[in-house]
Amino acid sequence: MSKRITRRPRNIDALHASGVLYGDLGTSKIYVIGLAFAVAGYASFWLIAAVSILTLLIGINYIIVCKYYPYGGGVYASLRRRSKVISLLGAFFLFADFIITAALSALSAFLYLGVPHPLFFTIGAIIFIGLLNFWGPRHVGKGAFVIAILAIAVLLILFVFSIPHVPVGWSNLQLMHKGLWGNWTAFVAVILTLSGIESVANMAGVMRLNPGATEQAPVVTRTASKAIWFAVLETAIFTTFFTLILSSINGLLLRDGNVIAPDGQQIRDYVFRFLGTTIVGETFGATIGHYFGLISSIIFGILLLSAVNTAINGMIALFYIMAQDGEMPSTFKSLNKYGVPKLPHIVATLLPVVILLFVNDMAKLGALYAVGFVGAIAMNLGGSATDTSISMLKKERVLLFLSALIMAAVEVTLFIDKAHARIYVLVIIVVGLVLRSLAKEAKERKPVVLLKKEIKLATFNDLEDRGGVLCIVSGRGQALNLAKEKAVQGGQPIAFLFVREQRVMSERDFDRQVGSDKSATKLFNYLSEELGEVPALFSYIVSDAPSTTIAKLAKKMKVTDVIMEVPKRGVIAHLLRGDVVRDIWKQIPDEIDLIVLPS
Image (cartoon, rainbow, N blue to C red; front, side, top):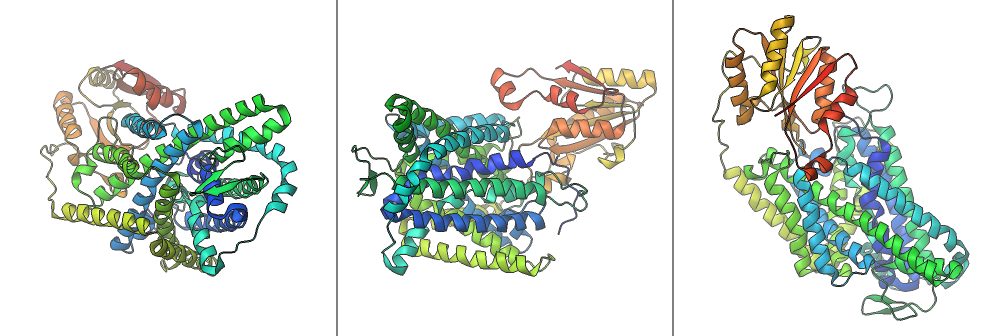
C-alpha cells in the first residue's frame, strides 16, 4: 500500500459521499422498474429482488475496497501499479459507463417531466451542464445530497400510501417461465441498479479518516461504510418494494417493449409519476394525485440531472489522470483558468450527445448501459482479490473473488446476448487504444522558462513554524509591495505561495515542480528581482481546494498576516465557485490578519 501523505483535504463526510453515490446508484430505480416490467411483466419482482440482493453484496465488496485502498480504489487507480494494460481496459469500461449514464439519466429526466420533444431538451441540458463545469463548481456534493433527501422524502410518502397495495401486488405476482438461460438473460438485462458504485471507491482518497487514523496510516471505513450502506439499502429496499407495488396495478399490458396502463398511456419510462398520481390520487382525489406526480417528477428530474453532472465530471477526471500518466495525448492535460481540463471538458460533454443522436430510446440505452460498469466492477473486484501485496483477510479475499466471478459471468452474457453493447464497448476500447498510441508517439515539450538558480523552492514542510508574512501570489500587483513593506518594517520573513488551482488531481500533481508551470516560473523570477536583499521563501503547490491549502499553511507557519489579491469575477463564476476569501477567513485563527487587495 502506498505510504504517500496526501495533500488533498479529507473533507468528504459520510453524508456528502452518500449524496454523490446516491445521485447515480439511487437514481437507477427511477427507470429500472419500468424497464424490468417491460421485460418480465408481473414476474419482474423476482428479477429486481435478485438484483437488489446482488446490489447489497457488491456494496459490501466496495466497503472492503475502500478499506484497503484509502487513497482511492477506483478500477483504474487500484490496477495501475499491477498492470498498465489491465488498468487501461478498466478505464475504457468506465468511459463506456459514464457516457451512457449521462445520456440515459438526462433522457429519463425529461421523460418524467413530460416535455414535448424530450430529446431536444435532453441534448440541451447535457450541453448546459457541460458549460457550467467550465467554472468547476465546487458544491455539487452538497446539492446532490439535498436533492437526494427530497427524493427520499417523496419516496417515503409514496411508500406509506402504497402499503395497502402490498397484498394485491403479492397476489398478482407470476413465476418466471423462460427457462434457465431466458431467466438469466432477463436478470442480466435489468442489472442497472449497480451503476455508480465505482464512484465511492474513487472518493476514498478524500474521505474523512476514522477517529485515531492518520495520513501515514489512513483508514476510511467509517465514512465509506455509512455512505455505501445508506445508498445500497435505500436502493435495494425501495426498488424491490415499488416493483411489487407496480404489480398491484391490474390490467398492465406489454406491447412492443413498452408498458401500457389501463387508461392507455405508456408508462415504462415514468413509472413513479404514474404510481404517485394513481396511488395518492386514490386517497386525496385526482387533483392532489396529479400535483404529487408532478412534484415528484420535478424532484426526480433534478436528481437524474445531478447524475449527468457526476458522469461528466467522472469522464473529465479520468481523461486528465490518464493524460498525466502518459496514456492519453498531452493536450488532455491543458487547463483553463479555473483549473478545469479543457479538452476533456469538451469531449466529456459531447460524447453523450453523440450517443443520443444515434440511440434515444430508454430500453436501447439500457441495453448499452450495463456492459461498461459491470466490466469495471468485475475487473476492480477481481484485481483487488488477487492483489497479494495487501494483507487482506482470507474471507474478504474470497468474497471479492466470488463476486468478481458473478460480475464476469454477467459481462460475458452481455457480450453474447447484446450485440450493440458488444460493438459499443469495443469501439470505446479501439478509440482509447488509438489515443494511447498517439500519446506514446508524442514528445513532451520542455519548459520554456527556467527558475533562477538563486531561488530555492521551499516545500510544504520547510515552512513549518516560520512566522512572518504569507503572501498568496498569482500575478504582479499590490500584494508584493505590501508584503515587502510589512517584512521590512517588522523584520519578518516573507513566504510567497503560488497555488495552482486544479479541479482534477492525479498522483503526479502532488509532486509537480514549478518548472512545469510557465506563469508561476516567470512570476517567481520577477519576484526575486523585485525583492532585492529582502529574505524570502518561495513555495509552489497544486491543489483542488486552494482555500483549505492556504488556511492550512497559514496555521502551520504561525504567520501574523495573510496577504492576497483577488480579481473581480463575473456573477456566474462567483455563484458556482463560491467565495475563496470567505472560506479562508473561516478556517484561519483569529490572531491571523487576512488582508485582501483588489487586483
